Picture 1 (cartoon, rainbow, N blue to C red):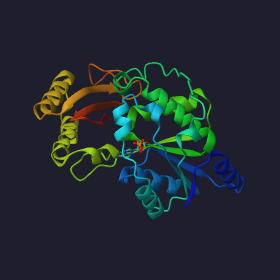
Picture 2: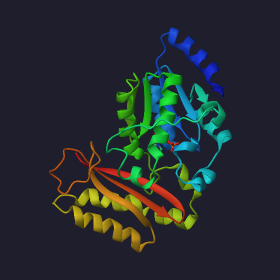
Picture 3: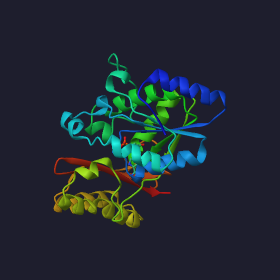
Length: 280
Ligand code: AMP
């Protein structure tokens, strides 16, 4: 695996590969890699000639300075994991390399970034969009891979490439889970062993409502989820059942063809998100 720290050198290298007609697959990450990230790399490997993974903890997408400070940084083990899955290129730029000057672009994603994560993390998606636009412009991949765990993010990135007429295909990949169902996340390693145990209640509750969303019982399901988690000292920031295309809340299951339930929960000071597709 080749590691690049500088944009110009990386671009030069990728230009040669493009001249050789290689298809380039890209997986952007913030590091602290786990099997979820590696499943994206594996998918990219199967659909491209060259796979590039970026590891960059993007400061401008953090709306909470403490969250940024304690975000895990494990570049040495990240490198080992990337080599083990045969990733071709690692791009690991510094903050100065990515933002020599502040980028103050303000994107308009309509209602997509006003709800759920957008509501509770003001500025988060604008920061994500700035870094992803920058990375896609540098790398110009044929395909870029994102996890469905961050469902709202995938919709916003799809909208971003449409708005900016970027030619990359945006591919959404299924959520990898731990044995007890907890969605893999770099933040899981920040949980105490007790917190880690109770965290499994999040997926269990989501799986249960998927089984029970047969009638027109949206409010009951919402109450069930918040009550179950609250009783177990998990602080639900939001739990929404929404139209999977618009992310707007629905009041009955026949209001949309695709329906997804999304949740954000705080366990102590650690914030976790998850979602489950209810229909189809
Ligand atoms: P992050 O490093 O958290 O920014 O994540 C980088 C990419 O990996 C994003 O597209 C995430 O949606 C994706 N990802 C994170 N966790 C998982 C998971 N458990 N399963 C699949 N993809 C994931």
